Image 1 (tube, rainbow, N blue to C red):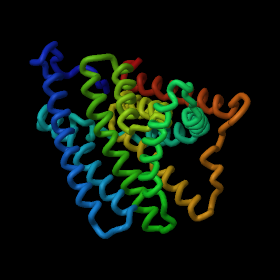
Image 2: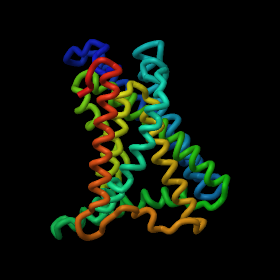
Image 3: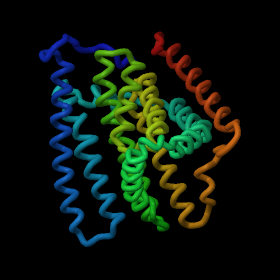
Length: 300
């Protein structure tokens, strides 16, 4: 299934693509304002900080990241489910390959996280670095609040909201929403990387930008190649859920904090990371070839 084509892409303000883009942005802004209002109300509730962050996150996911692509797709067609590829099964073989890609690529991703976090700006840009670090610490404050639990209910709520709901919502927004619209006007590769760039940039974490960019691109290719949004949803949910589970195990003292640096070389050549990256590329290439053969066409 190809994501390219399907609608008239006339140039100018009368083109369907431009109209859908305007609708998408308008709904996004309205939803964002509503969520900001709700977040203010939640902040006054007599509940612990973790619960406040989880409730706000759930509302944001439902109204901004799910509501925006749903409404836009509804304007495009009455068959919203089909437009967003929600009716296309990922297939068990693809689900298995998603899990394989996650685990074999873990070392490379951890190394990239280490490199990105270790970036030091020139002295002339020290103030900019301090500002970016400040934003990073602010974002981590909310992340730490979500992950700071040692209870079973806390683990379940974290997986449900951070893992499953966020994974579904963000894939619907960035892949079935932004990437799908871009695919109507530009080649698939460009659409994948542009939507991945937006995905990473909207998290406002420069010192985590490149790992998230790579993840966004991988999720985008899962969607592009399989034709099912569920493939990238499963990949995203798996990644987020593993973060929640790892943090929970660390908080309970079941695993060492060093597990977050698994495969990372702080000095010398990163053999584990490079091997992990090469193996990941090989698996992705073979997967794409298999899907192309089954579909009778290539997505490259």
